[in-house]
Length: 471
Ligand SMILES: Cc1cc2nc3c(=O)[nH]c(=O)nc-3n(C[C@H](O)[C@H](O)[C@H](O)COP(=O)(O)OP(=O)(O)OC[C@H]3O[C@@H](n4cnc5c(N)ncnc54)[C@H](O)[C@@H]3O)c2cc1C
Ligand code: SF4
Image (tube, rainbow, N blue to C red; front, side):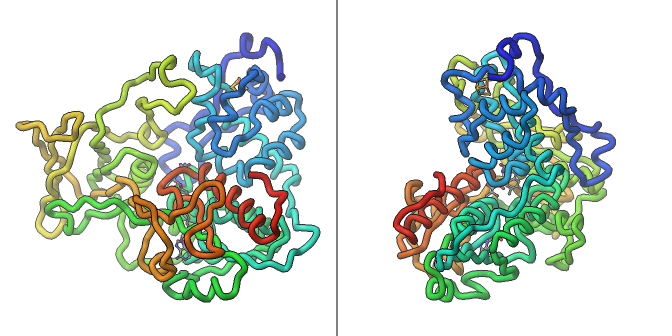
C-alpha cells in the first residue's frame, strides 16, 4: 500500500485542460500533465483495498493498486512493466479511456476516486521519455503464420501478442496508415497520432509486417488469406453507421460523423484527402445528432473549424447530475457527463427527435419534436433548428457485411456482428477468429485491447496446443 493515511491527508487532484479559448485554436492535445511530485501524491491516495474494485472495473484488469504503490515509491520502471503486463497501449487508454476503473474505485463512494487514468498515463509517458520501451522480439520463431485484418486497437494488440509468441504476423489494413479509429476517428486534440506511429515502429521491429491499402474482401480476396495463413484474425471494427431515414435525408449538408471526422484527421497529418467533397463546419450553424463520444468529437472539430454555432441533440432524456452511489457503485453509472468538447461551447438539448430536414437542395433547418421517456412525440412541442451542416453521430449498427464477411460466409450474431465467444474467439469458419468491435459491436478502445489480447491467447493455443500468453 502507498501511504497508509494518504487518502485522508491528500485531496484528489487531476490533470487540467488548457483554457478553451486557447485550445480551440489548434488540434493538439491540451491536457496538462501533473508534476511528478503531485502524481506520486495522488498514487499515495490508493488504499490497496482488500477487494480492489478498480481492478474489476477495468476491462483489461490493470493491476491498479500494485502500480499505484510503485508510482508512489518512485519505482517507475517496475510500474511500467506491471502496466504493460495487462495493457499493450497504456498511452492510448491513459488519454482516451472513459476510466470505468475510477467509477469503481472505493474512494468514488465519496466522489474522490484515485486519479488512476492520470497515473497510468504518467507511468507510460515516462517510460517512453526514458527510453525504457523497446521492441520485445520473440526469442524463437514457431514457423506459423497469422493474418490480422484491421489495425485498430484490437488488431494491433492481437498482432503484438502473437508476434511476441514467435508467430509470423501480417496485418492487412484498408487505409494508408495503421490505428483504425485511433487514427481516423478520434481527433488529434484527444490523442495525437505520433503515439500510434511509435507503437507501429515497435511492432515492426518485433517482426510484424503491415500491408496498407489492402481492403480484404474488396481489393484482396479473403480466400487468399485463409489459403496462405495458419490462422486469420478478423479485427475490422463495426463501421456501419446508424442512419436517420427521414424526409430530407438526401439534402446536401447532412452527413455521417465518420464522413466528417476522418477528413480533419487527414488534414492535420497532411495526408491526401480521400474525397473531392470536403465537409467543413467553418461559418456554419452545425447540429450534431447523437450524444456519445463521436458526437463530442464532431463538436470539438466543428468549433476548431470555426462554426458559427454548434447544437447537440439527443433522443435520450437528460440524465441525473449525480448517481445514487449506493445503488450503482461499483458499476458504470448513468449520469450527466460533460466532455471537454461540450465545454468549448455547444448547446445541448435532450429528449429531442428529428422529424425532417428541410431546405432547397441544401439543408437549412431541422424540424424537431420533444419526446416522452418512451421516445413518443409530445404533441405541440415541435420546433425548428437552424442548420447548414448536420452530423449524424448516432452510433454504429454492426460491421460492414459486404465484402470480407459475406465472402467468408461467417456466422453472425443477432446484431450482425461476427459470432464468436469470449473464451476462444473462434468464428464459425475453421481457423478464423474475431475480436474487438467486429465481434462485440461498437464499444471502447480498452475493450478492443482486451479482446485483441485474449484472442491472441486463443490463436496461440490453437496453433501450438498450449500458450503462455495471458488472457
Ligand atoms: C469518433 C469516435 C470516437 C471515439 N472515441 C473513443 C474514446 O474517446 N474512447 C474510447 O475508448 N473509445 C472511443 N471510440 C470507440 C473506439 O474507437 C472503438 O471501440 C475501437 O477503436 C474499436 O477498435 P477495433 O480495433 O475493434 O476497430 P477499429 O478501431 O474500428 O479498427 C478497425 C480497422 O479495420 C480496418 N478494416 C475494416 N475492414 C477491413 C477490411 N475488410 N480489410 C482491411 N482493413 C479493414 C479499418 O480500416 C480499421 O482500421 C470512438 C469511436 C469513434 C467512431
Ligand atoms: S479501488 Fe481505488 S483505493 Fe481501492 S485499490 Fe483500487 S484504486 Fe486503490
